[in-house]
Amino acid sequence: MISVSKLLTGLDAEGDGLRYDAADESTKRQIRDRKQRRPVVVWNVTKQCNLYCDHCYAAADTGIADGELSTAEGKALLDDLADYGAPVVLFSGGEPLVREDLEELVGYAADAGIRPVLSTNGTLLTPERARSLRDAGLAYAGVSVDGLPERNDDFRGVEGAFEGAVQGIENSLDAGLKTGLRYTITERNAADLEGVVDVLTDVGVDRFCFYHLDYGGRGTEIVDADLSPADRREAVTQVCDMTRAYHDRGEEIETLLVGNYADAAYLVEYAREHMGEAQARRVYEYLRVNGGDPTGERVADIDYQGNVHLTQFWQGYSLGNVRDRSFGAIWDDESNPLLGALRNREAHLSGRCADCRYAEVCRGASRLRALTVENDPFAPDPQCYLTDEEVTGSRPFDGVASD
Amino acid sequence: METLETVDAPRGDTTREWEVFCRETESEPLTHVGSVSAPTAAVARDQAATLFGHATAALWLCPAEETVRVQERDLGVSETAAAEPDDGESAPTMDADRMTDETLRGEAE
Image 1: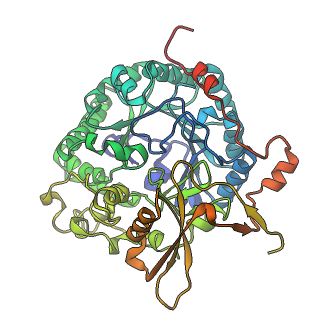
Image 2: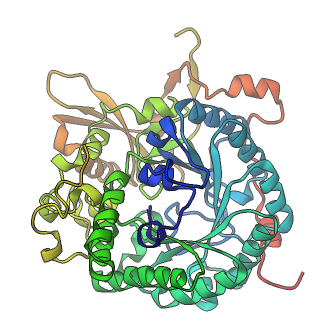
Image 3: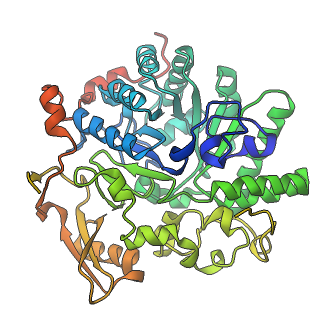
């Protein structure tokens, strides 16, 4: 997760402690110390969902799946995560609001010292649920919208889903919850990006997360609808330009890019071209601390049955199950050759990733896309949009690294 | 191990799950390295080879539903369920009708 607003406009945000080891320089409440080194854990509390989105990595549907962790198991899992020092648990799904014990689990996480946040499609976020989640201690609600009304509803399989999500966002904001947008950019909806930001800014949203499509779950069925490298570059440029334009108007919005660490390299190139060498150097240093693609390291996923995954998108392989071993025991077990290789991926990346001058801020980007398209978890990410000229040569700022 | 319990919760839903065991060199023991989701044994074998082929002398796969898991750990269910008797067995989720009824669609309320 790369904060464009932090890197290009200096906007302070609560996640900076986790993302850039920048807790000390922030005026916002930050996650510190041991927790900074533990993964953010996505927990898909259910596979059930009231919508049917084309790109759903969890392949969710309306049916209740067998073996979902019970309330008691969920609380025991949260105890495990708290003992391990997980800083954040992201309640996701399916649609997490179909679980009637969501507030109980959110409250349990908060009491255990884990920051509880939510990923939802927003259409079950009634005023009552928004207030009860706030009272339980929810710290943030991210609501998914993937285009203006017609395009979003087509993507999400239910007419009225856009209006329902906006209603949910308003309910969340009215309850006093920090609320943001999640937007997965594809060829089908890239043209709507700025329109959606304008609509939701008017509603009161000030945090926007733009996801690149990863190739997991139903996402593997729409790979053809993904952006071309040139269009991806244009979309990321649009996010950068838009962030600076809002900032210049005095309207601060937090913007983030998720799911393609080629963005890290591109942000350095963008900063150099538009803001000068000194700013590019600062951007590079933040991103070096950030550490590149987090798969198997700074993000983890636990599915509705307790299977532990390398990221939420990589559901086809599980490291183990929390019904068998504690999360910490699974996550720390580097006798697993794949986990060990991912954490030492510099020794395994191939093709142009092997010699990329931006390797330390990107680390090969999505290993899942490489696996899906190239059948090789260490091949270059097929969605790297940097030019050969940009990736060739020595590190951009030799001497910046402090270690 | 003092108390061993059989864990019979499913490991997969729409796609079969296959437990993967890996031997890194001929002199080492087989080690459990997780599981892959795949519709057939052949696909599971290919997936495991793709993920672990760089570091393994042997791969064994076993259908998860044929694997008996007997262990001490119970994810705290016995303790918590005893304290909260209504709470131990299944996840409380909305049924399909209620889910549809409660879905916001932007209509005036």
